[in-house]
Amino acid sequence: MDSRVASLLAHVREHAENRPGVYRMLGPSGELLYVGKSVRVRTRLLSYFRADDGEKAAEIISHAHRIDWEYTASEFAALLHEFRLIKSHRPLYNVEHKRDRGHCFIHLTREPVPRLRVVARANGESGDYYGPFHGRASVTEVVRAVSDLLELRDCASDTPMRLADQFQLFPVKQEPLCMRGQLSRCLAPCAGGCTHAEYHARVTQARGFLEGTSDTPLLLLRERMGQAARRLQFEYAAELRDRAERLEQMRGWIVELGQLLKQLSFVYTVPGHGGEDRAYVVRRGSVRDELPAPATTSERDALEARARAVFERPEPETLGLRAHEAQEVMLIARWFRLHPEELERTLPASRLLAPPDAAPSLS
Ligand code: SF4
Image 1 (spheres, rainbow, N blue to C red):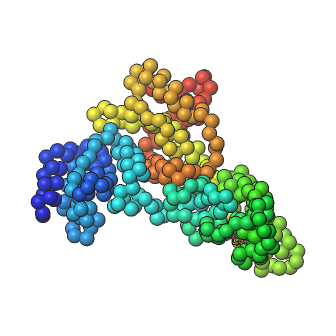
Image 2 (image 1 turned 120 degrees about the vertical axis):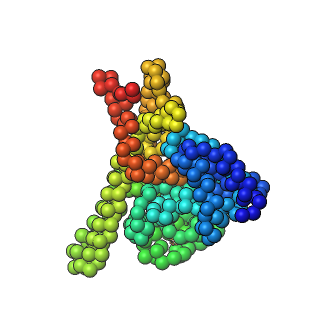
Image 3 (image 1 turned 180 degrees about the vertical axis):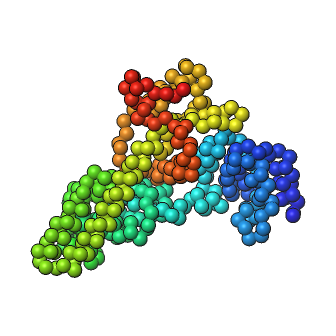
């Protein structure tokens, strides 16, 4: 063990305690290499010094020039703090947190001529993210089907667009730049095939489908199935039926996600280390407010007022999640999936907002 690592070990041995908290490993210029959390900070940090060569922990410690940590009131508080630090600093070694390999999202891009894409992470470009979904292959198929049915473009972001109502100094007749335009699977905004308003009407339908408020792609698919059957194109009709089933399945996921988001709206009281109990106001899977858990009637009234303000704030009840929201929803949902008993510490928003005779019980 070299002297730098030995002095880091001595520092941990001398100062770290076995309490919940978040720790940071910093590089030679103070750059953040890694952020971690543990219910027992001391034990976790000491484990880094026992890691075998080739393990990630050994690699991190071999580059660390400083280790610091801060204690938190609970494991849940550590989880949130770790998440926020990783989100704002994106440390080099926090790869797992940057990407959740089991999930994917549908991204409705915020471009002048938007597209639907399937992405692994919900923290890239601006736009709306829908998900998280399991099964990238089937989500990709559904996105392709929705794009074809609504004739949305799926070409690269730098493909030049020439909408029909776009001013052109020397208008020339254009051919669509790919087969989708020629096969009527895209409105061909690259070749004056539609106006801005016509294209955006389709984007609105796609958004409605992804938010569970519109069935347009399914209705179009069923209409085409009927046409194919009437023309005795049974093989094609069967293919369309399979596609419709996948779209129905996606709609099922969307409804499920909507229910999950509704369930994840509550006040969550967490007992903390040394009596530092905290109350978290969670709306649609993201922590919107946090304060010490109330011990007196006036503190309870204050918490109730803060929680009401959060739950009653007008907000679109859609499934379109911004990047940071989607990640936090996944984090909170995972916490309660791994610790279902913690749901007993929650007071659902629906009960808090119930009429006065069904009074809330924050006590
Ligand atoms: S037809 Fe044009 S706009 Fe549509 S996908 Fe092809 S290149 Fe893109």
